[in-house]
Image (cartoon, rainbow, N blue to C red; front, side, top):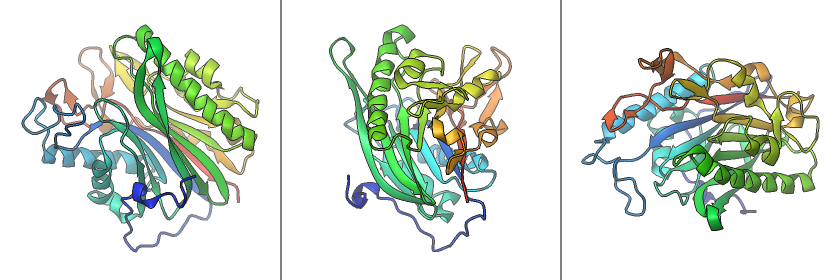
Length: 342
């Protein structure tokens, strides 16, 4: 346990003094978004972030940074159909400062958001983080789970963020992930993701020793598709709706693969790398229940652009190689809606 959440690490508590009445029927919007290289403009001597500075390759300026966080805000508010999300998992953020800018320099400042973040051992300095509404979500505890391998597969990757909170009267565990990438080749990097899946499954098993039916949401950019071994065999996350095992997990993202789209596009092919996975009890008549019809990929038109090479559409990126392109991210956000039984 971290005591009273070690508020020094939470930091960035924003409160406007405005009270927001809760809806009669309690629902919570949870979104995950890989925001593709949300860097500040300064050179951190401890990480390989030099390209994202004003005088270097990408000519990354404060003006471009401000434009990017405004577009991220637009995506986040659209996810909730105009309502501020209750929890936001993020990947590819450089540090606490960029998160503070996101919640203080955009209309997200209108509600009281708190931040949980820790610098990870990623060589480029990109991390996962979680932003939560302090007027809707009661934090209980958090931890950062190290991800690394030894021997032939020696590596260090982004930590997994485990956040425990109360939604209404119910406790729920959130895990924010950004698994090792495919850079270097799919087969060459596959075992790194398998190792990460084993690390995460061990944490989930530890929870289930204490409570056989905990409320769990896994979110993240997993750099893998829902049918891969790291999910089906190692994480034990099976397609919706077919997992009645109380210790099993349901991969809600398998619903999304039935359509032509995805969350990331390469070579004209869509893939679902950004996923939402829940404990099996959360799709049944549970106190906290996933609303399937209100969950999925958020493919808003302003996050897409025409794909002139392969036709169709693709995510509207911030950069194309070293050239500034003006978009938001190479990923699309995903969401789940959770309802609390009255």
